[in-house]
Structures are given as C-alpha cells and as structure tokens.
Length: 301
Image 1 (cartoon, one colour):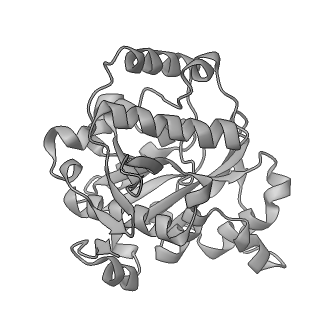
Image 2 (spheres, rainbow, N blue to C red; image 1 turned 45 degrees about the vertical axis):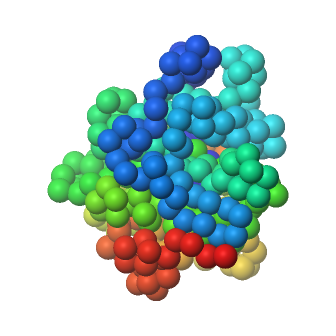
C-alpha cells in the first residue's frame, strides 16, 4: 500500500538482502547516519509514537511486520527465501529510512506500523527508485529538475492498529521528514487489493475522475503493463467506491494528491497499483495548520 506501495521485487534481490540481514550486515537507517530525525520522536498519540528506525534490528522488525501483513494476511506470494526468513525485504531497503509507529504501552516498543522513505541520495546509490519498476517515473524527474522528490512505499499497519490515530501518526512523521529534508514532491505506488481491474472498476473510475494528474505531474505505466483509468466516469455509487479505497490512499486524495492516468496489475501481490503524486505546494492548507507548519503538533495525550 502507499498502503503497500512498492512491495514488488526480484527474488535475487530478496535473496541478497535477506542473507545480508541474516549475518548482521544490514546497514543502519539512511537518515540515522547523517540526520537528526532518527534520534527523536516525531509524534505521539497516547501510547503510540512515530519515529525513524534507529538500528538494523528495528529495520528487520519492520521487514517482519511487512511479511505478516503482505504475505500472511494478504494474498502476496512469498519466495522460498522470504518464507525461510519470514521478512519482506529487497535491495532498496538499505538505501531508505524506515518510519515506524511504535506501541510503548508494553515497554517493549513493539512496531505496529511502518513506511519506507527514499530520498534522491538513496535512489542515486540504489540505481533508481523502486516505483520505476511499474511507472515511467524518470519522465517526471526530468520534467522537474529543480524539485526534490521523496518516494514513499512499503506501508503497512497491523490489523488491530488500523485506525485514524495510526494514520495521523504516519502523516505526522512524513510531514516532519518532508520539512527536515526540504522535500518538494512526494510520490509512490498505491495498491488496491485484487488483481482483476474489471472487479475494481468502480474505485478505479473514482480515482480517474476525482483526482486526475494535470499534465505537469502525469506519469504513465511501463509499456505493456498499462491499464488505463476511466476518465470522467464517476461510478454510480461513489460512496461505496470511496469505501473500497485503502485509508492512506484516501488520505492522499484529501490532502491534495493526484493520480496518474494508468494502473498496473501486480500478479505476485494480487493488487492493482496506481501512481500517486503529491506536490508539497498542493497540500491542503488546513492539514498544514493541523500538523503544524513546523511539524510542531507532535504530542497528544
């Protein structure tokens, strides 16, 4: 989602990453090497906190959470290496920061939600963005050479914590990160569960009609994989179609995100993916006020 944004990978990449993690060589979180954000709590709601992963152990815990949600709860198909390690990992993980929602009530800092964040510096080291495996993202980057992009992906939350509070915390953490790293544009894949576009016609029509990307932010799918979104085709039951969208995708639409004109079917994960682009300048002013122009709304009992 961006809600699983970017949960696709090659088995070879997964094998190399899993072996590196197994022998304790998984690098520290990207921002933890150079930034201030990894050392502080970015937000708190009751007993839940949001912050960046502070160690390779916490990154592995986030990968284990992703495995539980993507492979055990949802319909993704795990490789033998993933089944053995019981972690969702790929070759991009080491070049990203990992945003965590942590439950502090038990005193064990259990990770109940996660989001993967990749800055341009990480993408340069990784050889590109993960989203490029489905969408022609390079066209967008070339169109805006003066903009600083942040790729969001691998989002998931434990079922019992899928609530407004957890989503708010994820957004608080993302907003703090955006300000910390002077990000201009957020982007990533968002997944709708199910790999038959015909059965998802209503939510796809809603996305195509409610938030179509203007030309400057429009990005198509890779050749041979494109599933065009219906344009100007509002579903008969728009309320029901909206209810079929994942919570974080609905959040992107409320805040000011726009949707690319084409979707991609991901057979391995049993999803249909769309591309979301969110220029920071487009973010609805009331959300900036809510979270704080300096991300100052961090601690709520």
